[in-house]
Image (cartoon, rainbow over all chains, first blue to last red; front, side):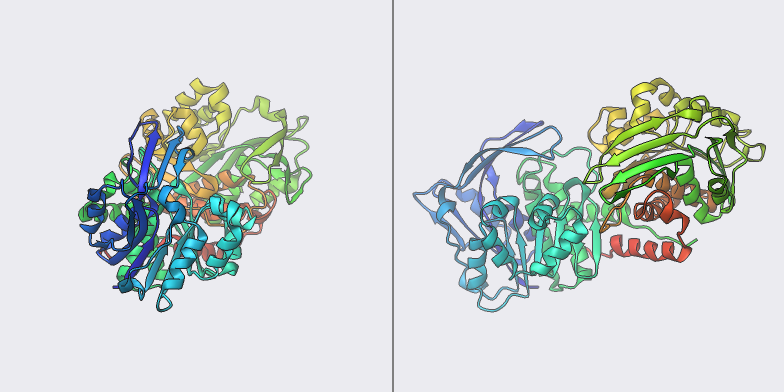
Length: 308
Length: 308
């Protein structure tokens, strides 16, 4: 098993979907990644920042899952990052209603001493310079660095994004973002251009259509489990990334073959995340539920064919 | 091996894509279905209608592949059905430029005597009453009836469409059409509603995102092979249906397990179809190319996972 460092927001979300709305609830990329990775009982640390308004019970919730929270800075007189959004009827698009950066505006991540030699680093969606700062603190070159990002940073911090992308092994990105980053419509061509920017592995997330994993000469397609209802998509991408990173850290095997399995684990965990608001489903998720759904994934995708 | 009856247009297409444009070339659902099914050397008959302007060499092209063409009526003083369309830059949408029904306007399909006892019937996209007329001519109840349709018939012949749907075993339909037919956004719910209309199996085609196969208690997801370039999508859906029907007729096994394989064969053949204009790629397709791509499909989708 490898040590895992996760950097990402720990935050408040308020969400509105066609099925209902929430007040301020627990959210943030670091939270979703951590919860997903904790399914594998890996030795993980979440590096983040919150304000004095952040409930101790939310921090305990992470700590109770053996997630090291010593890297979560608490700014006593600051307020926690807050995001609010409203999903459209098809659940594939959303409007951001509120973004209050608060303490995140001056976030200077500090990797705990014990985790500076971590083998796996998961850089959650944040300013590319913040992501880079985490990499610079590592005392040895990690075996695997995974980066998640979004279109926002392509719009306003593209140079910094290109710089951090040079130093990573895996990027997770959605289809529209892959197209924006490369100017290519074909995801095959887009993935090739992203390889040339640095990452050996490119994971393109396609929401309800699944996820593609590219390496230089291989491609793997994990469909998403067809769901009767998507209740709240918030955190699904982060949960995917957390499952992906957590499985790889657990197995300590960074081959393409193992990365395929990591994609399946990520997709499986994400399929739970969307069933309830925010982190609710992930917090109460049991191992036997995960195993049952992995078997559903097998049924969904596996076939045996004779050549005629 | 089962006998296979195919009904569908045999026609002229003129196609414009971002990569170029064609004059009138060979097209039509019946043509694409027949060419795909002929990969399996099944005993198939195409039932259709053409005008006196239709080149004998196009008919020979089908006959040379052991497709029975005695059910293709030639109206000497009529003109062949002609469709012209232009694809947009993303290749996922198109405008119809010209539709000349010509002889198709009075198409009264006649199933050849030798094929009235066929085990498998593939009803290509046509007016539902034409599809129904083929079913009524069968001398015994076929083992398997597969129907392809499109939104056009939902708009202007919905009652007839519902009637024919009652009498079929498998429907192939794209995602937007499944939503239109049922009024449900979730494809899982849409498939369940379509089951209730009659078909035991529902295949939902999602273009570049693959295809879903539903039966009452099973679901299978075949992704589409990620392609560097889609040259011309015309006929891809028909090629999928023809590969699906041809494989099932060849194997004479209509279980869910075998239908999964049929979906993979259909997807594989469709991935070739889009590589060139019209039928060009399908006409020159070799068996070893198909086998090679089936193996790519395996690589693309198959995984082996340990439960952690």
